Length: 599
Image (cartoon, rainbow, N blue to C red; front, top):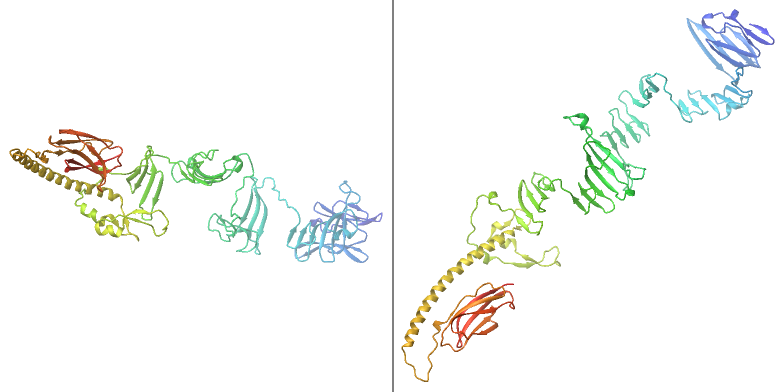
């Protein structure tokens, strides 16, 4: 080392320890500049003070104050290097035009004990206190980048770029604990993806620090919790929301017919896995600008581009209607059946013990009612008639119904109001308790309130009419027998009278036993009926009187014909009811019959 034009030459003759390559082997000229080389790197310092070569390094002083020391110490085979800053230091090298005349690198401590590295356009130490410090080191082991007051071990202000090295599979940031064990990593992969890993079974938390903190958490088991410290599903959202604050919102921001959607896809254990993966359920919401703002649940067999190919469930937004297998419901609840002749279609109501009812329409437009595998009844589509299934192939233990007429006489039909609404229209029926005392099989007492099977009464009425008709026919046989006996007596009496001589001034009496009145035909009458009769030739005045059931005279017709004949009676003007007609001869009622009028 020698003085050369007020500078210094440091050369190989001074390299007392060539193994460390402390100084360059090639002499370097310095004019008020110290060049220190280690390996292939040189540090150029602009100096205005004195340089002193010490036994273990170099000391640069200014006004007897150390500015910079570069120390080397060899002790027991160890080699230690360190660089000490005591005051402000400038670095500048414009040999290759990399710096302008007023561009400087600044190194130096502040009074607060922080060491700053900055780049500026002035050569004074004022730039160290400015806010444009590029990197700051603190005594409490903190580093700030673009932040001269770091609040954490590494405090970076502004964006950070982590660039993947060429050929590297994974690069990024590693996180280690106090034992230097790797506990987490944020990395870029060779495929262009990004990974955020937590090792040793840990979770990844966003929005907080601690086991139960954070607004979002990825568990080591692959679960995601939003607002949930320990999610119980692959995705769990825990949100104390209001009525208008949704837990999950899917928003489609494109107009022109696109829609928000949610897809569910499952792989089956059997069959072709690739084909089965295509079978999906979709939930989608059509936007309002399509004119059809509906919510659809659809099943797609092939996972095609058309998610509305097979719609299972629809909620119509504007009309507030619901459709099953109907994309555009036309009523509050609209079901389109998949098969009109199958009990598995339509509606099924089932209780907890497996008993069920099915309701569906068949291809003949009838509404069928099906219970536990049996068709019980239907409503005819064309007429609305209610029909019970009554095929004898479906019946066992068949027994006739007997002796119901006396029981029917004990029934008490009534008018009544329901207690829950006394202002409603009156209802006609029976009291279950009264019917139970007469016909217990007609009453179900197993529920809270007794119920009646009103369909039974139609069958009961027919059986009662049949029994009554048997009585009527029996009586008619007796009447015919009595009439025949009476006719025989009248004939005998007439022969006796014919042999009796009467005074000349006394007419012979009319023998009424010769008069007969027959049953009208047709009966019931639908507008016209014929009444047969036989009138003695000696009868002077003959009429037919028609009366109501209360005895009121409705019509009287004179009959001039004698002997056998018939009277045609017009009944169209009569109201439907039961009437009596009586044959009167010379002021005496000969016979009476009943006539029914229908419309």
